[in-house]
Length: 110
Length: 115
Image (cartoon, rainbow over all chains, first blue to last red; front, side, top):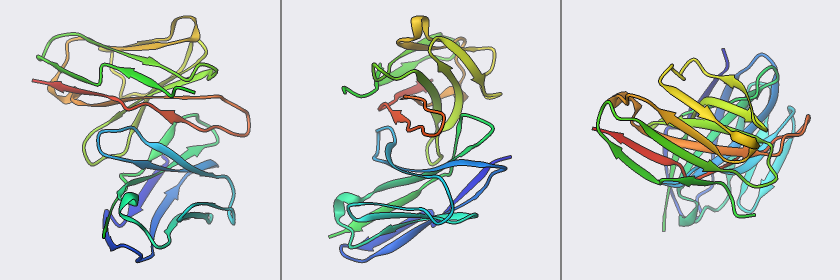
């Protein structure tokens, strides 16, 4: 059964303090690994899809990387507006659904 | 692109009542998904449609749950005889499916509270 584990559960950073979020996954055949951002009371907002080991994608202060067992979301010089829950999900090649982790709650203090 | 729209945003009901939620996907999208999310958890897959055909249902979707997507446009999710365990955020997502690429856009969800 596909599994996604995210760590840490919560992370508190000072503005400008760079860090990384981890997503470990188990899937029989990876079709894609997704990162989403979710603000309180809202639906997840798409950030990135990664398809194969070694792939990297960037958007503003965020950079996502992928290996055969895990993905990292690197946050460089974060700002308070980056505060949110970051969700990782995998899509198995044999299925259409996304399997989500429980997320990392990020709080960036000014 | 007006995004995925869900209605209502909040629903409070008493145990045993029936409720229905509506989702309007992005107009050109051919796939529509329903997920459920409880506090502190990631979204869990319930079911999905490609055009008007319901192609997969999770075992989480008991007989009390039914979803439709008439004419491949909007979708409804009905819960009959609600139970307190049904309290959750119900999320709809849509995508333009391509064999090699799929990106899901989520709505803001319907928050259901069963008293």
